[in-house]
Length: 185
Image 1 (tube, rainbow, N blue to C red):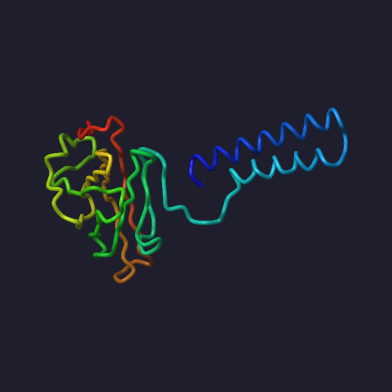
Image 2: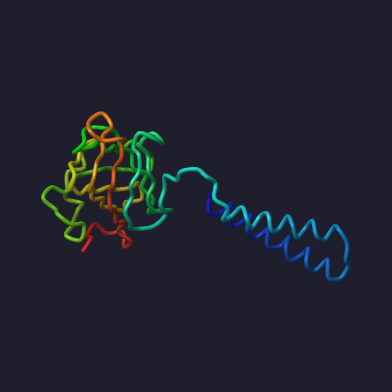
């Protein structure tokens, strides 16, 4: 559900709940309880676990581990103008392909020789000319989205089921620059 949809469901649920309680106070009966039940059901749907695996994190920084063979290799980080839909595919157990194919991504680059995201300065000078890049474990990838915002992802672990691992999996830490700039210090 989008933020707007969640807001509508939450508002209508609270309105139904409050209306049912008020109605029950002034005119007791069976019908007011239906409004209370409908309101509670709407509230529960906001936080009830769906059982589906989530392939998104709305946070502006964090660490992600997911199976890149699922969900077409896509994992979304951030939200609104700071949204980045990453797209990954298998390369090996020490490297992985990342693509600028999703509509939210304008360009990608690898910050060679950078050990930590906090060491990144002026990432707009990097080579963003290719559709795909193949980072190694330990590399930092820079994404620029269609709004001109930057995200830095440090690839920390890659698993490959075609080699010695039980599953295809990537772990990366990321920071989305909240200032909209190209400096991550």
